[in-house]
Structure formats: structure tokens, C-alpha cells
Image (cartoon, rainbow, N blue to C red; front, side, top):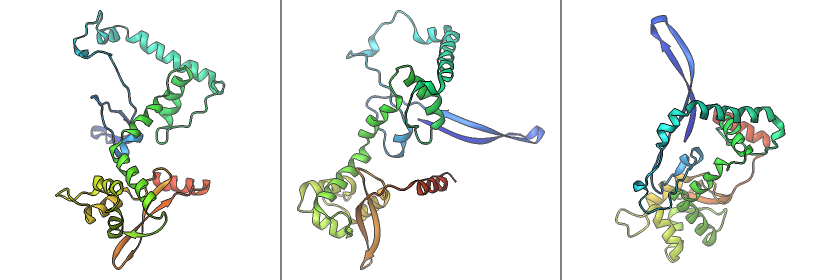
Length: 243
């Protein structure tokens, strides 16, 4: 997971405040990690498979940490030579990678050289992360069941949705996965409403949930297809988010 921001470094003794960039890279290790929600677009995955049942019992002829420290100069020099070669090549690299939104500088200066050298694109791992997101999987299930058994673009109250799903096993199971009551026996109106509010606007398979008006005091929800925004609107939206 990577992030970038800026902070002011204060030096009270001389009454000085210096704008300082803050760049951070966080690492997490574990077996079959699950990454969910907004973290997906900020994470890359690296897998190590020893191909044995008890990897902790393996023996090595060298200590990799010690060797890295001993050969640090050589390794750093090789990395810088790689980056220099890529910079010298410039436009001749012929790369057409789409920059990773929010991390354009990293994508340009780290990802592009790696792919140019024939290494795997680090961003390809994001597909696996997204595919393993339990929150997105639950959303996809509800969206597909809603699309299959209700009318896309039509407004429904929470009660109407549950009433339609109660006799459709797959639909009701999808709702139970996201809004089961505390007892676990039925779908909770309140929890389903709060879940829909939490996922409102998130796009999956070209569809998203939107709250549109109300009926007899009850909020109405609809599943709508997304329309692509034209360039001026995309630019305005990006400016408003960054601002």
C-alpha cells in the first residue's frame, strides 16, 4: 500500500516551517490475506511459494539479509542503472501503460521501467486482490440478483425488495449475506437500508444502486446502468475531488 502527502516540518528554535513531502510504503505479511473496500486500489500483491509443506524448516547456504547488506552498493547501483537506461530510452520505450490513478509518479518512474525490462506488471496483481474482496463479492451478488428478478431503473422500497426476494432462494441469500438480522433468521429492513446507503454509487458490472425519492415516507432505491461522463465533466469531477 502506498501513499503520498505533505506536512510542515517545524523548527521552533529558528521559527521556521518547511513544507516537507511525506511518502510512505506500508507492508503486510500473512497467509491468504483478504483486502477489502477502498484499500484495493492502493495495494499490490507479492506471493512467495516455497513449494513445501513446512517452509520454516528449509536450510539456506547464505543469509539473504546479510548478503543484501554486504552487497548494498552493488544492488543500489544496479537499480539506478536500470532507471537511467529507461530515462535515456525515453519515448523509444514504446510503452502504453495506463497510469495508476492517484499514483501516477510511481507508475511512471517505477512501474514503467520494470515492465520495459520485461518484468511482470505489478498492477496486474490488483485484479487478484479485487477478485478476492468479500465486500465487492457480496455487492456483485446482490446486484446480479436484483437485475435478474427486479426491473433495472425502477424504484423500490426496502420492503418491496425483501417481499420480492423472500420466495427466490438465491436472491434472499444474497440479501442475507449483507443484511441479516441479529438473530440471523431473516433480512433486516434497517440493515439492508444502511447497507444500500453504504454502497450507493459504487459501480460493479456497469451498474450501481441509487436512492431516488421516497414513497409514503419510505426511501426508494433503484439499480441503474452507468453513463460514461464526457471529458469536461470528468475534468471537473477530478478537480472537485482533488480540491
